[in-house]
Length: 608
Image (cartoon, rainbow, N blue to C red):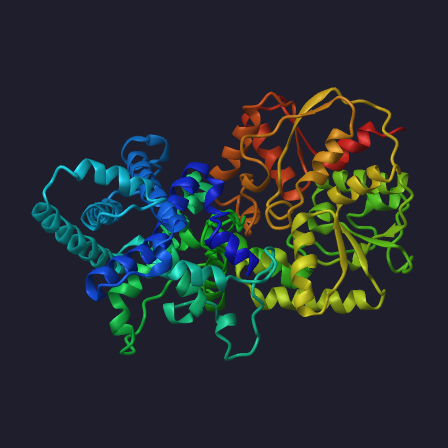
């Protein structure tokens, strides 16, 4: 309820864009006051009575104030729409209806002001508090009583006819959110931000089949489509749309709503629905999503774009068609080898660095305080192995009691779930939970934000409850506790790239920055898009594994943003991000900028 009040009445989300927030707040609160004022106007004319408390000076003051503020809001929005090209992004499409509604709102309040001013003249009574009405009535006092009576009657009828005209237009416009948005916010998902809706594996379950037709969407997902404000904030935050790819998150809701409006009556007569994937949405539209969560985070009315895309992916995967070849290979590798690289696990294989550092496996040291979950990248990708080894060395330097799974480590399954292969994810998750139970594992340090998010927010859905901490946050804790001695300054300027699954989904923003500021000589230069507004590297949602099939303009855009700063180093806390940045910087500006994991930078500053 607290979130509901903040979102609906305090306009907290809308206020993240200050100009829009101010104008929208004026109009929304003005409408609330208008409801009471219009009731009073109706009572005066129809029943020759007044609603007593609405004649109190404090209400008259507020009423007049909001007549003025609403006028300012309407003029401000119209001016912005017509003249400020800064706001005319490619999601905005002008139409007569878009202008008609604010004009009608303006005339509703103007006619109210006219009626109230004339009424005060004819009644010949003082109205303490009604400062605007009094000022306006002074300008009309030169008219005679007959003219004022006619003008008052015209303004009264005009006022209510305009209100009813507005009610007629709203159902066929984006302003339908006035009706549905409060309900959509109230019934928003209460799951943690980083988790997806678990699906039943029963053969009859629609969730396993995913979404093939519009009938397969949940009622809340359909409510989303009618709550959409068409403000375009999701477009502004979407890395795919910003990079001119297929995905346009605003169209996700718009296309479904339009289809329901056009075919709804026929669907109620059991007419077969078209397929969502392939017919209503191009397959590339669905596969372009990086699942970064920017659209969900930006939406002022709590629309869940991500769940619709994941459910449509589940539908595609369940049919076994139109799956990109690289994803098919990914699924096969995961099913056969328990890792996306398809590599067999042998004693010591791909863990040479662990052997050289003398790191025990959990089977050798089951009573270790922490399990260090290395992850697939840290295990099989040689450049990432260096970063994982750097973190392990820091743990040893701080005398942390830890062990690794070694040859028993399996993929966390996160990417399979985001790609839409829910049965495979659940099989992996349940297998890991069962395997770890014999060691009594409780505290897990993850090297990859995707593993972190999955263990923290999704494994509990299947009974896997652990104390999870990311390696970036753990480094910050070690520094705060004084367990690491920094003796080598690093005179360099760095960018820090906020990984989506560490920052946006789990609100880990300050800990990595604390680590960077703890290193003498390091100057942190923030990229324009950072923290909650960070721009995805383009690797999430399975796209890391399909990058060989197609160019990824998302990653190119993010790397260009980093190169445009004065930084000589990009620091990440995610193996995917690290790999993407390394590949793209070497291709665009080889040698101009270094890419390191946060553990690598910190290790270089520690005493030998």
